[in-house]
Length: 211
Image (cartoon, rainbow, N blue to C red; front, side, top):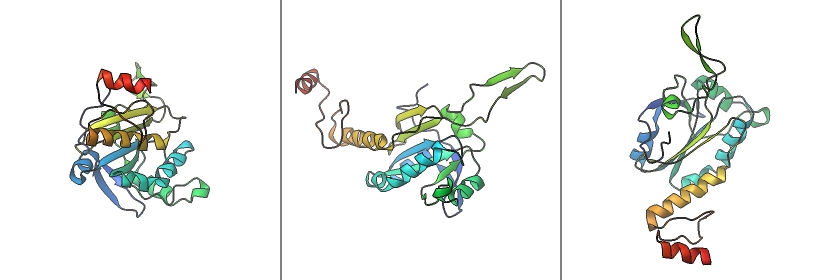
């Protein structure tokens, strides 16, 4: 079930930063108390392969998100200690040294379960023991959430684990949502900042399509 248009779950999660500090982060509160948008992206596991390419890609354009009044937060089900070890592993050795935004450590899977993004496709009932078992690591897909200043989700997407994200697309989506907030216009297909938007009327759409 889509969560777009709904408030982000009011759940606090342990987090780690590059300084080795462990603290709690409530994404809903971060958006509301700071009056900022939040981009929260989930990746399956630390010390893997596609994941560091994404994490560094978000870091490389972090200032562009900040210019758009947006907080970036990464997340997985790894522990804070594993996050810190990875944050201290050099980039040329597959690490994420140099990353400055916080990483959530959803080890109890409270938030990822509430979002419905855990890979439980191999969940099965064991008749012999009577237990519900999961074959595999029970980690998250590559899910991304954009949350507005009121804590409302205005975008969500979920990729299968081998598929890395296009970081620039999230910048475009933030620009489009901000344009809607400020101008009251809607943004057509492939809209980018500086391009023409339109009013939500049939005449406006017809004129746009003719041009």
